[in-house]
Length: 112
Length: 114
Image 1 (cartoon, rainbow over the protein chains, first blue to last red):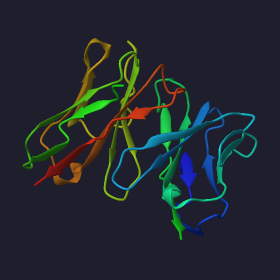
Image 2 (cartoon, one colour; image 1 turned 30 degrees about the vertical axis):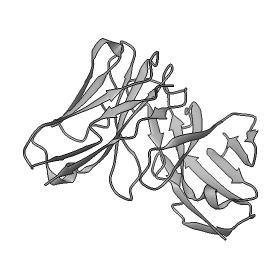
Image 3 (cartoon, rainbow over the protein chains, first blue to last red; image 1 turned 120 degrees about the vertical axis):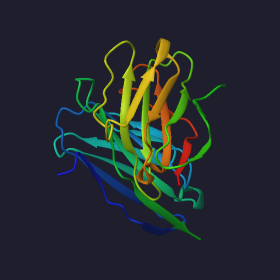
Image 4 (spheres, rainbow over the protein chains, first blue to last red; image 1 turned 45 degrees about the vertical axis):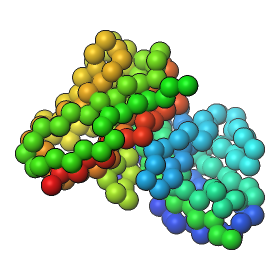
């Protein structure tokens, strides 16, 4: 099983739709969680951190489910500009082993 | 403000040559990361520096790859005897205080091996 898994998509949704992605992780000792977005041929940019109690930033809501070992990202009222690849990141702390893992990303295409 | 700076932006070289890629992190950031990304693929973690601790080299794909970080700031990723499969975008990121902090990425170096 991969350390971090994401559905590659693509998720094709119409403008205004609500869409959700999950990211599962295998290491129960994982410490911190983030969502990044990456536009085609650009560098990843931080979208939001994921807090234990869940957090919201405008149209974006992130949640953490430690019991089932996944994080989620919900996008409401999708815009054309939301089209991108969404990467989850899971960190494990610095123990001399792999400190963090990026998921391979979920591609979102918002259509007019 | 100044972000993460990488140079060169593009590098084309012949198979078998050595290349050096440079990363200048955000001032004050103690953690620095190198990744590579092949076309249409996800990010592949290479190496992570945190302060004066021994770097996490668990992602380096072979002994042809090495990286150093001098004075806790600028980092250089060196690839010796380049192969065609080394062609990729090499991304550098820095964060304020380690993996629990968000990372800020540079624009990357696009490396092409002929």
